[in-house]
Amino acid sequence: MNPIFKRELQQFLRSERIIATVLLMVAVLGVFLYFLWPRTAVFSMASSASKQVFAVFLICNLAFVLILVPAFCATSITWEKEHNSFVMLYTTLLKPHDILLGKLMASLSMISLLILATLPVSSLCALSGGINLPVLLKAYGVIFASSLTFGILSLAVSAMSERSSSSLVTSYLVIALIAGGTWLPYALLSSQTDLAGTLMSVRSLSPFDAIYSILYPEQYQVTLDAGEGSPLIRYFILSGVLAVVGIGVFIYGFLFRSGARSGKTVERFTDSSKGLKRKLSFPFYLFDPLKRKKPIRNWINPVFVTELRSKILGNPRFVFWSIAICSALSIIIMILATSFVSPDSGTGGFSSIHKASIIYQIGLVALLAPVVCSSSITTEITSGTLVLVRMSRLSALRFVMGKLYASFFYVLLILSCSLPIIISLVSISNEAELGNIVIALGIVLMTTVCLVTAGLCASSFSEQTDSATALSYAFSGLLCLASLSVLLFAENISAKAVGFILTLNPVASALGRTTDTFNGILPEDSWFYNLIFLGSLSVIFISLSSWRVYYLMRRRT
Image (cartoon, rainbow, N blue to C red; front, side, top):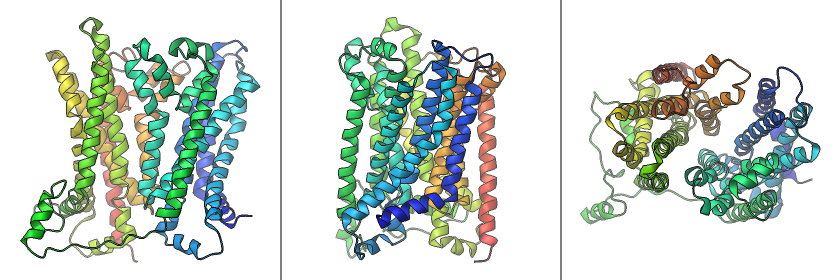
């Protein structure tokens, strides 16, 4: 047996955290099935409601698998790098392809076991009727193929990355782009019938589209004008292509990048020409990290200034490219949303612009906030610099608030790239709608504060950055996306419960104020209650983070 495969698999199976995660996933899917189950009698085989139960359950099952795939694969190679054990693998008698196959097969085996663990719960859906064994096998074939494809892509990202946090973030972004982002062109351009074939080809990359084509083949052909060729076969072909590309990137990163060590050198000023050269170099060092700084004033939070100088403004290229990419995305989304809106379209066309702008801004915050905050305190703990902070006069609350200011400033800087969206909304809105736009922007800002404080709280209680990143993304997905799933259970729970849960969701509250999406479902002042909820969560997270940092500063080392 391959020793790398044996060690990795035993490490996975002995991990209490992974076992608890799998059990939690099965339990959550069981709760979903309980609320979706008919309250009167078992549905007939021809009932559309039974097929809806199975469709919702399969989508939730696929979403959970895609969320957990990076946890097994995205840190496979970076863990070795961070613990200085990767170079030791080269001194063994193992050949490079043995190490590669061992890492790959161990991660894919855990993904397969994860899917098999949910199979008994999925089999219960067959009791509701409306499905048969071939449909169940096809659906699980899509789930298995998508997990393998995204698992290989996560391994490729891990081989190309240096840290587990960056590998996790990149893997989640790749999965979100392929599984969810491929639906964006269809959502914005669905009214253009001449582009149906192109939109269908783009959507074929998403496993959710394949699940939809299996459960509702007639509607799929009619609504998307799928044309010739099976959408399921097309998805398997595209998944195979992505898997081959991922294996190629994984081999390249494993053999040519993982073993290389980059030594960091500190550049020093020797004369005035050297400083002038740095000032004129791309992209202009407005805040040069090598230049001598003035002392920090007493009335300024020193942690905030340090984070600002070293991590944010001290890395101008990263900030520059982040702003450029986010600005380009906001402009593209606005062009796609407004190019097909005519004066005769009425409020329906403008409503789509409002939806696109709000979803883009909150989605941008949900993706960026965990990245910025998840390593803020864990880095101080693992590097040992928190011991130095103990000897200063800084209190735990001021330390946490400094981290909060710096993280919020960075997210707000990236969020300012959505100014084209805001300007477009203001230009097409009348005076009566300007107040609703201001309220929606307030919800976006309060969501930013809430997610930033949640990331700091996860960072303070986690020992490793990858765990803090996973917890931050889990809370972000729960707050912004998972709470919308209450609409699936609207028939089985009361209307007040549905409205209450949607009030806690920032996307629903912002859309309910600017559009008529949730008319009759949300209460009249849902935006106000949402702001109170997000503010209360922020206060709780700040208090927990301060208490945890205070404990870490007081304990003996």
